[in-house]
Image 1 (spheres, rainbow, N blue to C red):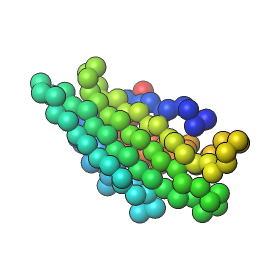
Image 2: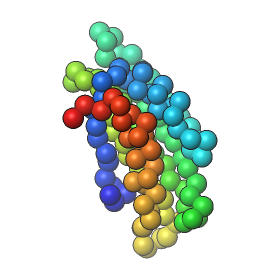
Image 3: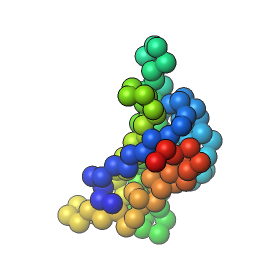
Image 4: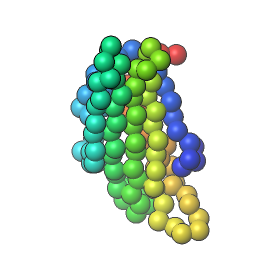
Length: 114
């Protein structure tokens, strides 16, 4: 997964439930920087969480933007990693972005719709 890729998955939860589950399951190593939930009416919602995590092994910080909405029926979760590199020319995240996104996938594993 490169830093420009995003994970996408559908879950059997409403966006507010999904965001609450993610917040409950994130480790203390991850700092919640921002959260927002918008109720658009008629049962439609869209929410955002933004986390930051420091990786000691690589000496880098990574961010993870989590977007959840149910605008097309079922709840869709998009996981967008960012950062993870401190190089100006060589932008390698050493797996930090994938690891960060995977932590959310593990939290939601029981609710993922194939």
